[in-house]
Amino acid sequence: MSDLHIGIIGIIAGVLTTSSFIPQIIKILSTKKTGDISLIMYIVFMTGMSLWLVYGIFLGELPIILANVAGLVLCLFVILAKLRFDKAER
Amino acid sequence: MSDLHIGIIGIIAGVLTTSSFIPQIIKILSTKKTGDISLIMYIVFMTGMSLWLVYGIFLGELPIILANVAGLVLCLFVILAKLRFDKAER
Image (cartoon, rainbow over all chains, first blue to last red; front, side, top):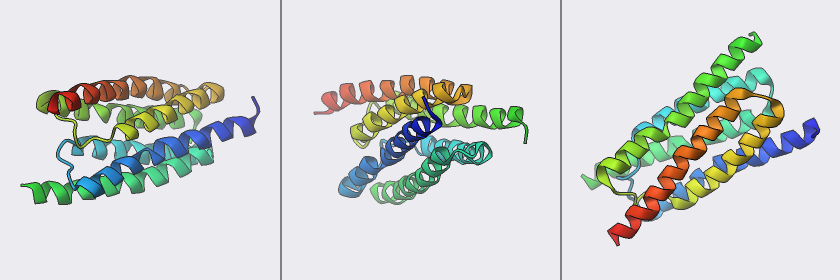
């Protein structure tokens, strides 16, 4: 397996794990309900992704870097939505 | 930054992103409610993690391998819980 092929697998992996948050965001936007979603999960997940970003920068692996930057943005959206809609539900 | 230090950052990152699903699982087990959680998110996420696993194996990066194996198990648990509790809610 060449470096190029490994890189392509990493990019597809990154696109999938990152874009996985999009259906969750669509669901939140359509139902405006976030009560069953764990806030702690997203906070811990974002902390971990920040470290994956550092790790990717030191390895010089672009798929890891891009996946985690995009993932951080999407997870921040879920957290902000949860803070807003949980408040509205109360 | 030495390879050892980069590896340690990767291991901490992996522990955090993987263990982030534990608070979600605890929340599900205590409320038995999963209606707001996106099933598609977890299916796409697991597909992506399977590819990250392949990527980690080819790079020979143990943090990536371990994080994704553990993540796959935890996400499978969320999916099975959702399939069970969503059915019970209906």
